Image (cartoon, rainbow, N blue to C red):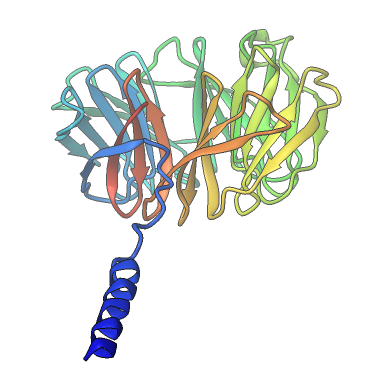
Length: 329
């Protein structure tokens, strides 16, 4: 009987120590998802302006979401009348939004009344439009194998198309520096290139390439840290590349960080980089020391594509889950 008691006690200790599995490791770094809003269409990109989120929704066109209560966003309207093709990127100037739709060019919609937007132009000859950016009074679009193209926005509802500049590779994103004298281009499998637009001539100038560097993977999207002259490039399966362009005739790769998944879009803010990765979620990365960057958190999502943020929240456009709202720390 004494031996049976001893056996019972030992068995009980084993069960107590091993019976409850440890909780899965938390990789979020303290970032909390506060809401997921299912959206019609496939959420590809997002632009935040005040109390509204403007979303490129693939075949669904334009979606406008009221985010005045970030913990419970509400769809204001979905609009695809006159929005042609599959909308993948979006930007906004004043009361006008611009949607990139590949070989269907750029669509333009007036959103002065968010509940009742109106299409102003579609199928603009800015093709194949892979991304759209605003700088000053101009629209800048990466146009794949054809390079990048400009349009004047004196009349924002009806862009006046300017010159096209050929680039190496397949231009997937183009962004100007703060001084608006350079265009940085993510050129797909070729890497990263810089073009001189200092002789701008109202968008009719000739803009030569002055520097470039090879990158692993497929260069998709660029964010800039103007203070340190660093470019952060989402490079598909290769993750995040950090490029020093302080000498813009000889940009140098400082670091490559493996994010997992397919790095699609990147945003820089206050020493941190936020990277959406298809099948890999949203990654928050400390980049204050470019040679020694570190992961701060990962938010699991199905197919993170685009992102934007305001002072308090990060907003992710996920092609499967819709709009994901994440509280900033």
